[in-house]
Length: 114
Image (cartoon, rainbow, N blue to C red; front, top):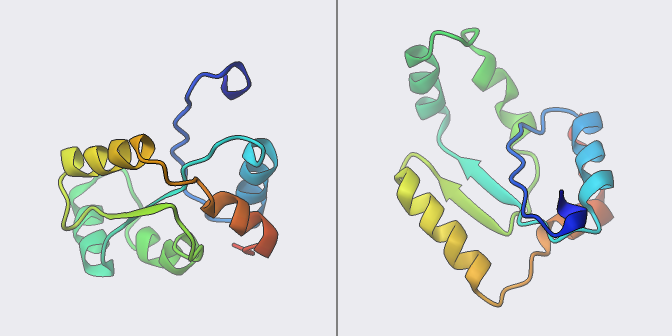
């Protein structure tokens, strides 16, 4: 889809090297807006308890792995921002003249997600 000029949203958890490197390999030559979506460990625990489809403790077990990349084009804290605010910030970034550079920087550094 991206090769045909169609914008694509990829929503994934980069919880291991293979998944992350696959994304890098497929998308490195594309304009990728790399968005970090974060919240505190306490908020993750609270949300996990509210959901019935998650194994208890999974979010905390993956926290340091998932948040290992230190480079994002934009980082959104969903604990302090509402969904519409996050969407507006993303749209504002897309409409700006700022370059999408985080993904390419991560490729050069080989993040090593494990």
